[in-house]
Amino acid sequence: MPPKKTLRSQKNKAVRNRAAKSFTRSRVKNAIDAFDDDSVDNKEELLKKAFSALDKAASKGIIHKNNASRKKSRLSKKLNLK
Image (cartoon, helix red, strand yellow):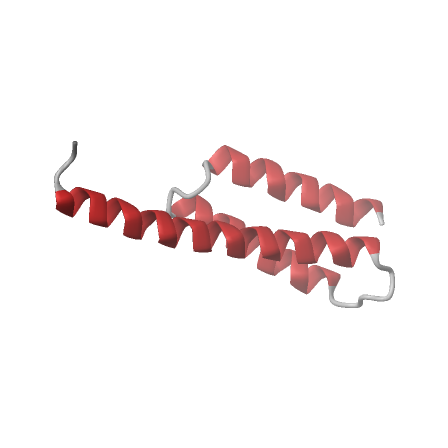
């Protein structure tokens, strides 16, 4: 069994990572919803926010950099198709 301090820090990191991952998912979902809804005007702004969230998550090691890159590419394709 790991030492108590390690368990505490692992729990804190898990909470922080979960929050950051949830934030990233929300930003990406908002961008996707904006692409599907034609009445939304700020699609590029939402795309920038999603890219920023993905880059931050990748730089912190919450998601892999290739995963972030793949998601950014797919979001860009969705925007260009509309």
